Image 1 (cartoon, rainbow, N blue to C red):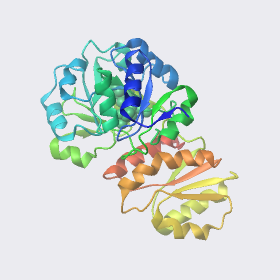
Image 2 (cartoon, rainbow, N blue to C red):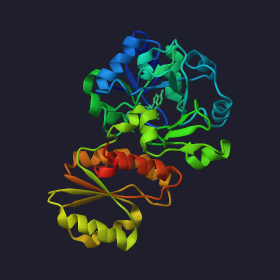
Image 3 (cartoon, rainbow, N blue to C red):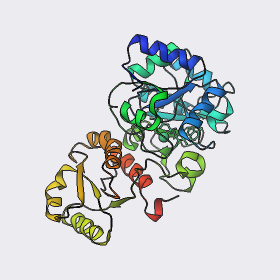
Image 4 (cartoon, protein in one colour):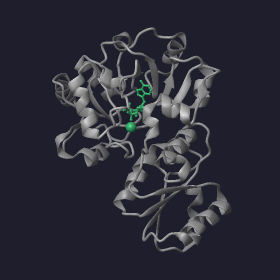
Length: 340
Ligand code: TXA
Ligand code: MG
């Protein structure tokens, strides 16, 4: 396995690869990234190729020092400065006017650029050692659940990729993306920083959900994403109502193995289903949604290894990190309203 513990030596090797125009995978506090020198068009092309990523889906540029912001962006609006002061380093990506040093391919031809400063010692050390900002999407094959463990990256890319192994990521969902080039700013993607936290700093910030505006503004939003191999169906409700909905789905399904993505509180209910086809995996207790979020992508990948033919997922309350979890589940799902 091409996994390297993030020693000073391994980070120096990874930085050498980046400077030479290559790509490496590295941990951040959200998910693993697949990085290249953000100034190097040929390097960034390799990311798109390795991921099988559509050319019209721009990538995020990662910096480790606020001083580097002006190397990648310009005309920083006041509201962006406020968000940076509060949330960087951390899981918040800002859309800003692009500095022309950043090749157009990074932004998929847009005149904006997405920038974030990860809150992870290995990511920061790699960026500093490379001496350049690092362009990096999540380190998964396009359309797959984002990697929250080095083994997920190795599974998607195999033996050729240099992977810094920082263990499991802490947040487990991607950064929140906020467009600061419009007033008031718009949340283009829910993520590690919640709407409630953002509203405390920018009262009039807007959300656009997964609707048309978000799809037009953030090209990545239009693709089916985060998807396990089996079709995924989200079931609303809790308690007996949830159980009835799951039982109804089981009755009509011809799948030979069925995964149930559950929470601890409902495990006793599923015992009553008596359906030998089901395999139930729990995200954890609903009282700790952050811990549930951390496990979401890993469990979606786990269902792949168990060869389930259908995944039935509980829904979670759409506040705090739960809003980002539901966004990811909808994008992974096959219901008509979320199938772009
Ligand atoms: O937490 C994260 O954000 C992780 C880690 C590695 O930093 N990265 C990540 O990258 O999730 P990616 O490429 O999987 O998602 C980037 C999102 C996409 O939805 C993309 O369309 C959007 O950011 N994006 C990037 N540049 C943009 C731009 N200039 N304007 C609008 N949306 C942009
Ligand atoms: Mg991604």
